[in-house]
Image 1: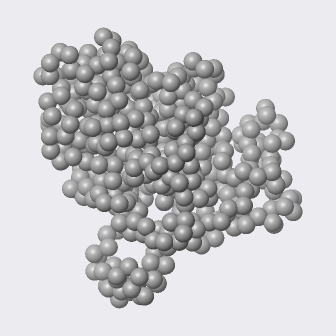
Image 2 (image 1 turned 135 degrees about the vertical axis):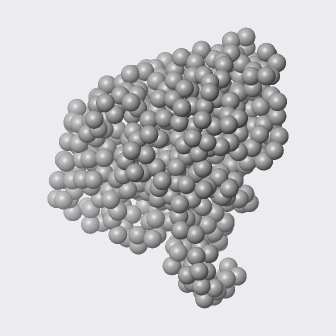
Image 3 (image 1 turned 90 degrees about the horizontal axis):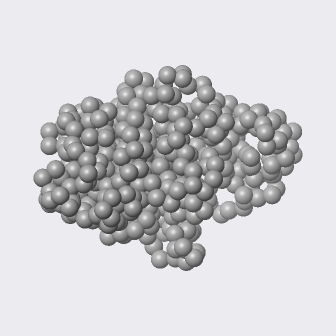
Length: 478
């Protein structure tokens, strides 16, 4: 059911590029307008490498030892059950169950030394925001999002783009989350994916696709088109204007059309503030409506991505950036409670997870290249942690391990066919060039032409840095 409604919210005032230039003249940030303009004219302020980002988030923690940092020479109790396969990247020990990615490894870079100290799933805050999880009351499970959290990187992009738009209606939101909000299929509302203290107007536009029952995992099983009805949720929350009278059996496109006709006649729309009007315009816009209809894609291409929820969400991610989105998160969640959180066994990793990732990520990279989008789209594929070098079970279930795990980066000028950083002999800790979540956030912001150490206002209007420390890994780019 599509529901659009409003909720009063006091949005923070922010700093666009024009704002920054204006306050720079006052010396607020220790810079002058003349110097900033001179730096821009001289090319010292780099043009963005990426127009958009597709952030592929494998929630639960894929094992480095079963994906992109295998250790075939490690002791038998560590190296795992799988063999390596040849790739186009010197020194890359990639899993035999990732053959398609191995065949195009000259298109991506593997960082092997990402690490942090949040050795649990609340690392989802760190990996999506570039900031450690702040203290807050988080419900009985201790995982729920709060308004004390740092804004997601996508929310920062949404905030900056909304400020730059200055009230003009855009064709698509900047921040989109597919196919579900993190944790919602498990009954959680996990942290790190929202606008946090920036406010609800900067949350992602999120689709909502349900599973059949408690044990279902649609991320790797074949899905019907009826199941792949990408629904919009979370634009606002107030009873002032709702569309929940629409027939539940209507298609999403029929709901959009009915909603748009109803909004045209509604006098209540006039009472909405700028954000609410923009949200309503976005959800009823023809371009966004059409982009959400995945049936418009050729059947053969849909087959290449995989007819499972993850594959079709990856394809929808490409459609969203074509529609104008700038930061799209494509999530592989844990609807069954495990998936990439492979404590018990490697059986699902071998049978479903690795083949699904191999099929869909390779299809995305090929598709972006074929459509001329590869050079302007940064693709980041990562989990919030890796898995322990020593297994927990005889079936190669592994425990949480945030002390060394991989990330894959491609597109937007990233040099393909290389690895960055080296782990120790057991893939347990970085041996050189450790990389932090702050470094990843800086790299993403930098690629979009956003100064990662620039400022946005906190809830009190005080300027705070987008990223506290870290550096952009500019050496990854050609």
